[in-house]
Length: 227
Image (spheres, one colour):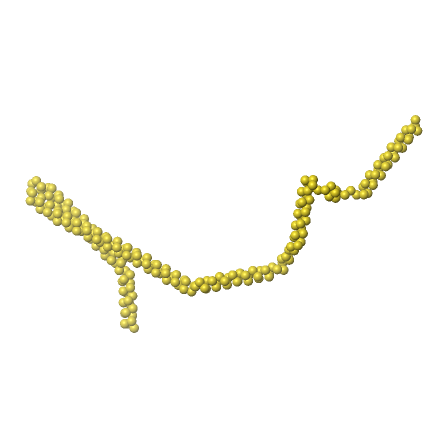
């Protein structure tokens, strides 16, 4: 038991160590870069100091001035080396960061690929087609059920012959109206379309005319007798 736990812990520790390796490397390089930066500032100060000594003794003591210039050259050489080392460290930091980003990106893409496999693991074209076919069948069944439920509440189908007959009457009516407006309808047809006058009304008018004539004849006869 203890041995098994030890091996598992060792493997787990190695995995965690490998995962943190890029971060630890970057931290170490940044620490080195900070140290080199401090050394760069120190060497620059030393160069400035020796330059001041040389300028101060250039006329009074040429030996002192020359020694100061020699030390300045030595510091300058060290400064160049330090600057080159800083560039190397910065380049390594950038390379590790880029590599780590690439690794993280690749791991993310692998995780996405595994997720897609899990999602599509149970899906095939045949299953999708079968599902769509089942849905279409269920929709058709639903339509049949709805039609059956509403069949008693909806009137019977329209009689096509009845519709054709009504349509013909409307067309004939429209044609008659157009013919009446243009004057192309026969007189007999127009007379038939005019309102009919009742026979009793005509007879009544004739009777009133006859009575008026009789009254006129009577007045004339009375006038002659008065003379």
